[in-house]
View 1 (cartoon, rainbow, N blue to C red):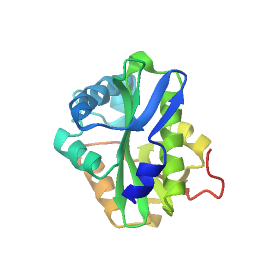
View 2: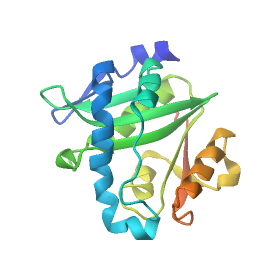
View 3: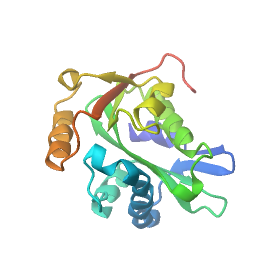
View 4: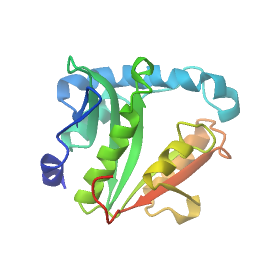
Length: 193
């Protein structure tokens, strides 16, 4: 799988931003991007059951993902990361664990470019499906992903056992589980969406 990643999608340009595989030395900046992006949820925090100061992905987790070739960044013209996507593999399935764009760079198509890159990588690598967990009614969550062939599925139809651990963890964190959904995108017959 890693070899496919080395062949596909190392660098793609999108409106002056470069989508590429994350470098080790950049990983320390990704939790900052995640925390900054999380601020956009503040107006919904009570409704969604979010904490005022939510935890971010640890650098250790990001290092492991980067070593497995499962972190992509969107870099600006100075080659500094302004967004990232973090994927986990579970057998023949990819799980889009996290996608964040710094608020100062949003509305430039960066999130869309990251999602397209993950979908192209998955399709080109022969991955059966991509899953993710997201909020149903937040505009830049479930409604956004439907544009890329992701469909809401019942949690009971999870394609792999580990996905249920995410559901349990979210409930433990106090998320409003009526607002959380699992989405799945099957491998596309058309590469290059």
